[in-house]
Length: 175
Image 1 (cartoon, rainbow, N blue to C red):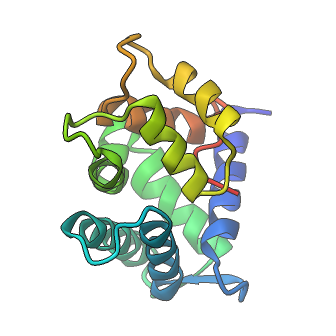
Image 2: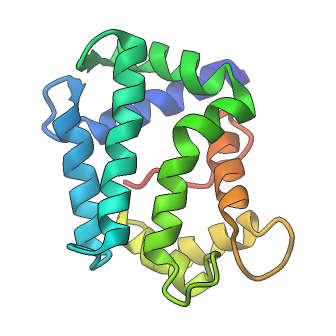
């Protein structure tokens, strides 16, 4: 499978996961539902960090919807907008569109306030997106590229980018 094909396939999978109501389109309410579910699973309802995560999710939707020219994206429109705004722009695309959401996730998970994610905090994230602890441990080891025992926002953004570009198979999208 070529990198472009793998990236498109992963965007199609992301579409399926975001289409919360299964109507074949991604709408702002789908992003809102996922953000609310994650915030709830992480026990962050009513916190500044939980609200920041919701805001970041909705900003990502707004960016992609603007690029697609519609508030109701079909799978084709979503994949095209994501390829245009994120994939084709490489690091800059991931930094502007995806990084704010990842930073907001880090802010919710980072219970010790050190600005990074520990293995225990990573397990909490994976549990929130429906992936078991053993998988979280394996993923953490693969993601900790500098061997620090913690994951920085940069390492997580790089991992999400590499996943979508077909460079790793770490299941960061949930199930």
